[in-house]
Amino acid sequence: MGVNFSGTTKNGSKLAALAGKYLKKYQIQGDQNNVLILFQDGNVELAVSNLLKSGFFNSGQGLSPKKIIVHHSLLQQFQDILIDKIKSMVFGNPHQK
Image (cartoon, rainbow, N blue to C red):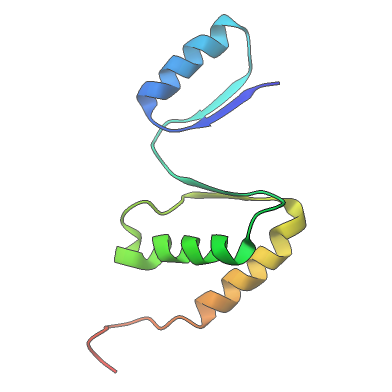
């Protein structure tokens, strides 16, 4: 079994040293990107809502996930809800009607 890590470069380098010491496979995403992970028992509606809030609030500048991992049993539901919510969004200048 290996280790998958997403976080700071500083912590990733510590993890890499430990993984090497114990000859464990590892994958590090050390650029501080956030990940949305939706497990099989997760709330799909909540995950999509939070994803869209973080992705579109302040033009996505902030803590919006760059990687999305969805349990295969929820993938179609996740995609359908995501597409419906994006289609219902209004884009443009908020000061104009």
